[in-house]
Length: 76
Picture 1: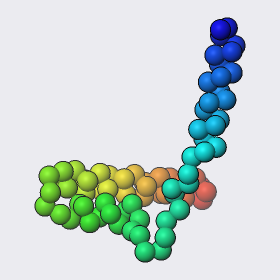
Picture 2 (picture 1 turned 120 degrees about the vertical axis):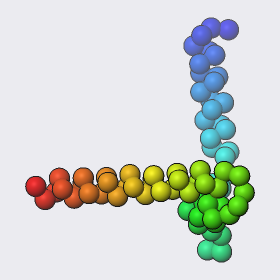
Picture 3 (picture 1 turned 90 degrees about the vertical axis):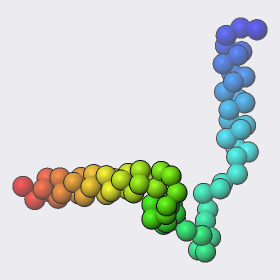
């Protein structure tokens, strides 16, 4: 089989898998968001909870810093 045939077959297979994939991103209103789940986990006593809390703190700091940068660029 030629390289072109292999690439074409792989592409078709990939497209078929993507097309048949279910959309699991839809959440009902009764489920918690990822942020809420992480907050609950961060407050627990299980191993690794401190790392989750620290990660959330760092992510919040980075988002706040980026917002300040964006604001300062809009109002020079």
